[in-house]
Length: 477
Ligand code: C2O
Ligand code: CU
Ligand code: CU
Image: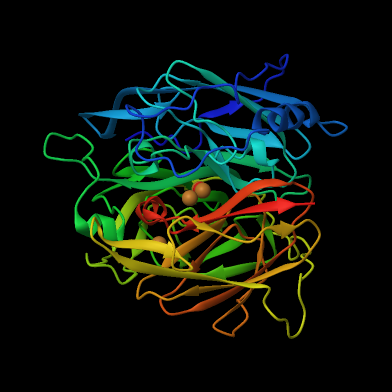
């Protein structure tokens, strides 16, 4: 398999702004994705226009214009085997979008799929009308175009994916990485983006339709492991060099306990960008939707460490085992100029000392006649949660009442993990997704800045999200 983890950057272009047709699209029922639990408010179109107009580059920034088309196509997840897949611009994952803090990203999405779709910009602090959920926009019907336009406020490794019929749309290949660069990033020898995923293929090499009680319970864990859309990848690195790896876990349900042949590597950043100081480890856990930025290397010529996931038991019905994503081949030596600074940035703690949580979010399940079990928040599917006021510090206890792990994702706002079962985390960071282990309590803190609208949080195991393990709330002034 070709090593394409270092190519495929798109974006970087100027262009006159397009106007979106969004907000005017008809509501799709019937042929499209299943049940709709959400609908945008009456003033969604006006809010969209305001957000569109307000997106201006910072001084020195520019408008990065990208055309994305979502469509059906043939893709070789496994070399030599054609699969009917869905992708952006003819590839899985979609192009790596690459821009700087202070730029405006303008993405014109054309939907050439047979069903409605949207794009959610996972992790970004953007205005609610650009968040890509069906709480804020009507899904884009087949044949139509919608323009997302927003300023990039934070450096980090983010990703994009549909927020409609996710168990089908993401599984077939609709997802991609978004890199936002800051001013003082560590200078390493090279950089690559690794988007990890798995896919469940049947005997004829086609993506299996969703279904079955194990999948409903565990979330889908496909047996074909992918790095940037390909199984059995080989990555090449020069001996003596240190690379920056931006890793995204785009899988529906799989947790990746990432190891590089047991060799030490260094964590530079997480969901919301750089951490305060580098941390050297031999493994790191990525729940679904998690990202991590690493410094990897140096290795000696001829080494062949596996990029793998060690066994991680998230208490599913199906068993967890150690599995390989790719092989890293170490080629001839090249000079290194990599410098990993001792301090990466400062992160002010949002809370200090004892605090009283402002709310509790209970992740649970409920027996259901139709599904056996439904996943819920505070005892109801698609929980309607209390509004949040701009400027009022939020301290939430996310409590997992079940016997399995759930990755909790908050849209649109970074949070800090204050403690997990009473213990502070190993280091301070900004996150948008955090694993909540079985029967555990994770305390998070976040500050709602002035971006009113309808927001949501949910379990990022796509099947749990679909079955209702999510909450909706308004941010109000
Ligand atoms: Cu990547 Cu609502 O999620
Ligand atoms: Cu919902
Ligand atoms: Cu879950």
